[in-house]
Figure 1: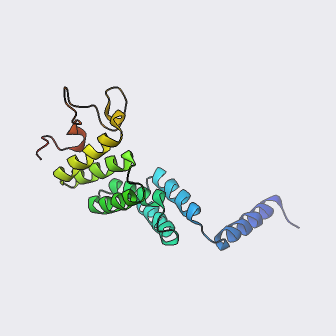
Figure 2: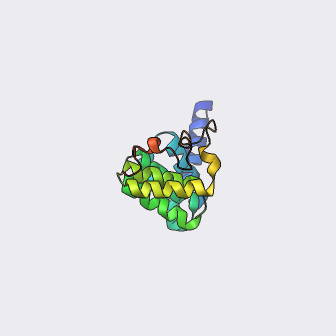
Figure 3: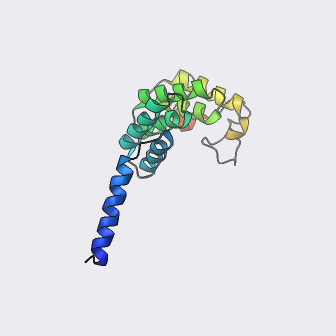
Length: 158
């Protein structure tokens, strides 16, 4: 005779086996990667994004997600590579340019960071307006140049 506890254990065991036997999909890996990112488990997120990319090499979300996790792990060159790959897929996506600029800046590649930031501004100047709440504070006063203080660049000649 099954008790309620035994029945629950049986159902959970069956469900676990069933899920483990199901083939993983690109979307499944991406959702898992995002969940790992939200939990702060960036190495695991990168592994799931890599699995998604193995199944679908041109997947923008997996490529960009990898870059974000590399940023959290302070693996600047890996982040740069991931963001560059994402830009091949979506070359006019301003937030990818912003992320790439941050990766360049964090890695000490100031000139490349500034050039990439200029590209992001060209694609969407509204991202930098004061009071917008975008990823950077504002445009420099009386200039069409973005304020690069958030990139850690200080002087634009970096």
